[in-house]
Structures are given as structure tokens and as C-alpha cells.
Image (cartoon, rainbow, N blue to C red; front, side, top):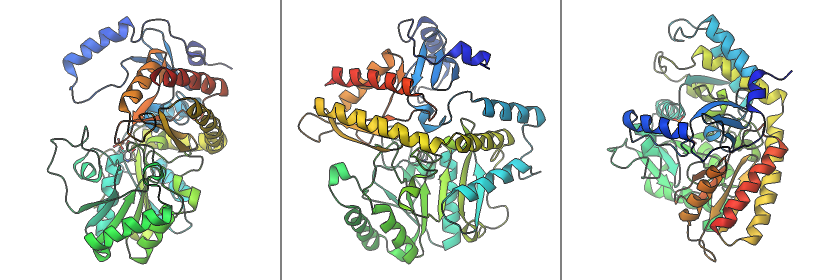
Length: 445
Ligand SMILES: Cc1ncc(COP(=O)(O)O)c(C=O)c1O
């Protein structure tokens, strides 16, 4: 049976007004008057409803989503299982505060996280509202458990916008500029960036480790925090062997290895977690985004002895693990499992990588095509060089938007186009989106 939402949204991209259309333009004028200028919008069409991989704006344009609200709606928009679970939970109760009176769904989410995250060791989790909050708490726990203070992060890293996570994030503009002073005891080392450094994973790990040992001292390091595939920094996939070598070094030195899987987790890369690809077993994993299909939920999951080292009452928050968000997470995880969305992510990766690599043969501005599963990117350069070409990235995003496709830019140098389609995108929708993207690249070339 086709739901009324499905029939009103449909499955096809359709642009019927100028973009943005008149109603979006009017809403944007209202927005300018009352919303802080510090919060920006990439694409100023105002959304009315959505289904699967299609968003419908207030002017009736049907927009194809290749961004999933920055890697959140992996299971697609308005998935019936999630709608049902959230509606039922809202009707039952919306909040008690888990620290005041608990409820089963919080426990079930932690059971799922213990089962899904890598490793068969005993694990415990704590739930929060945003990715930044999860990362902050992971660092708090690692410091408490080890009695050490230093935290190692990487070039191009993005871990959030709170005070500690700004310190952990690499890029100044727009995330950090003028917002200091930042939290201390954060040390940045080079990432493996095969397109730019040409190093093997082992060589890049040796370079990072040497810097840590000389500049910080292994015995002072509480945690090494890394995105297994970097997100905002440019969808940088480290060379094979880099993560296993870092993981071994942390184990040898009593350092907590924290994998920030907030963008790369929950089937996005073709496995439940990006570290699964090389069999790396982190001591702690931070998750958010794809975990709850659009409801705000985040988690720190780690070795029970680390997670339980914290004194009673040391972790928490009013809304962390809110029952509506927890119900959404359980429905999301079930949907991912039932529909084998990790497998679908791998299929999407095969199609997109082949398509972009063939396009790369024809145009001079694509320097690199990379990614895994449905976390995919192309790095744009000035022809014949590796010099970042952010102008081309902007032009490509704008062309896609004008034609009713959401595509996102990222990267330290603003020159990477990233694709994060909902994992339920159909073959026809993917073909359509790649067609628009190819036209956009050719027109920017
Ligand atoms: C890898 C990573 N860590 C942390 C965060 C911060 O998450 P949030 O925006 O939910 O605070 C993000 C958000 O993009 C992210 O990609």
C-alpha cells in the first residue's frame, strides 16, 4: 500500500520554479530578520515534507538528496518503521530524564551498541544529544580512566563546535575563529592523506607516532582520537595499515584509542563501522548522526572497565538518551539490519566510484576520487596540479542546487565534493543524481 505521504512526494526529482522559489525566498527574508547570522544555510529552499531520497520544498520542487542532512538520514526520510516507533513513543511518554527514572529503550540502545561495535569484550555505553557532546564525554572518560591528560588529534580533523571539540577540530574558519581560548592538552599530528602525501599507511603512522613520542611523550597521552575516514576535513581515507598501526601503538602504550564514527558509522561505509574494514577494535567509539535516523541521539561505547571507571554521577545530562530518540534509534538499527543497508552502501559505492572515475578521465579538475561504501568524494584541483580548486567546488554545488540536487562541499581547502546519499536511494535516483553532477563538473571544468 502506498502511504499518502509517499504518493504526495513520489520518487522523482522535479524542478517547477526558479530555485529558490518565491515562497522559499519569502521565508528566507523572515529568517534573516530573526535567525543569527552565525548559523548559515547551504541551500535556501525551505522543506515541507520528504520521503526516501526526495525532499519537497514549500514551492513544490522535488529535490534529490545526496547529502542525508550530513550523513544522518541513512535509512531515508519518513521511513514507516521510524514514523511508527517515534509516534508510539511520543504518545506513551516523551521524557522522564534517565537519571531520574529509567526506561527500557535506553538499555536496549546500549545493548545494540555493545553488540554492533567492534570487539567481543565487555562494553558499556552512555547516551547524549549531539556528536560534540559524545566526543567531549569520550575524552572526559579516557582522562578519568587513565589519569593522564594529553589528547592526540589529527590534521583535517573535525570533532564538533563546543569548547573542547573546537580545540580538537583542525580548521579555523568557520569553526573556531574568534571563539577561543580553547581547552588545553590537545596535540595535533599529521594524518595519512594518500593523494597529497603519497605515504603508505605504515609510513604515515610512523610519522605521526614519532611526533607524539617526541613532542608529547607516550606516558602523558590519555587518548588518541581519530575519524577512521575523515568527514568535514575532506573525506580523507587513510592508506591501508595506518589505523591498525596506530591502534597497536595505543595498546602498547596504555593509550585509549577513540574512533569517532559520528559521520562514518551506521552502515555508511558498507560496514556497521568504518574501522571494521581493517578489523581495528577501538577502546571507545563515538556515534551520533546515522544512529537515530534524524532524532538527536549520540553515544560513547567503550570497554566496560574504562566506561565504569568514572565515579557515580560523573556522566549524564537532562536529555541524553531521550525516549523518543532511543525509540528512533531502535527502529533505525532494525531497518538497517532488515534491509541490509550496509550491503546497499557497498553497491552505491561501486556505482558511484566507477562513474566518477570515468568522469575523471574526461575532465582536468578532478584530482582524486575516493571513498568507501556510500561515503564518497572527489577532490577538485587546478588542471595539471594538486592545487586545491575551491571555486570549482562552489560552482558544482551551485549547479546541482539549481537543478534540484543536494550536494555538499567539504575539506580543509573547501575543494572536495562529498556524496552521502540515503542508503535507500534507488538505482534510478542515483543515476539521475550522477547525471546532474557530471553536467555540473563539466560546466565547471
Ligand atoms: C566526525 C564528527 N565528529 C563530531 C561531529 C559533531 O557532531 P554534532 O554536529 O552532532 O555535534 C561531527 C559532525 O559533523 C562529525 O562529523
